[in-house]
Image 1 (cartoon, rainbow, N blue to C red):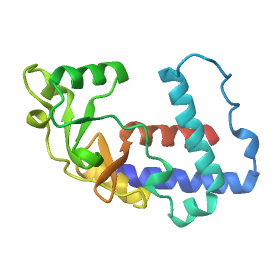
Image 2 (cartoon, rainbow, N blue to C red):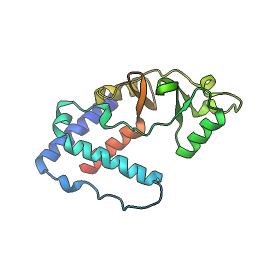
Image 3 (cartoon, rainbow, N blue to C red):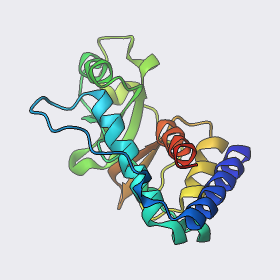
Amino acid sequence: QLLAIVVSLLLNLLLWFLMYRRHRQMLPAEPPESEEPPDSENEIFHKRQQILTTLMTNLEAVFDGRLMVRQFMSRDVFSVERHASAKEVADIMAARRISQVFVCDEGQRLAGVVSGGSVACTSREAWQMMQPCSATVEPNTPFAQAITLLIRNRLNCLPVVRDGRLCGVLTTTDLIMTLQCVLLLL
């Protein structure tokens, strides 16, 4: 709850500052176009740009506490089917540098999550390694409520579901990036 209070206070301070100064030119320039596939630096830059734009264009929503999970969640979610091998799961985690992969049934219905520590046994399938998700949110869940869920349940990520189907994830990295954007704007 302390982190949620600190983030809320910082966001309120940011909004006051932005409304006082009216500096919309503080957004960084777009990265140069390239034909190479996006690397993690470009992905981080793009995500940070999205967060900055969201904060700058939704000042009233920030003041009123109407920010929603959909505005900050990552939509690029990595999931596997129930029968994926431990090697497949480990390969995704290594290639994407992530610590958890979601397990979905047909139609992207969320079944559970596999964390890095569960992948050590190479003869198992995803459904044998997965744990049920202790909490989920919907895209229209208030952002502050999602932060509280992450903190209270000591989670690294919070699956975002719509009608039981996985549509995004809110991670602690998303929260740290949001805090970084607030500090950047200040």
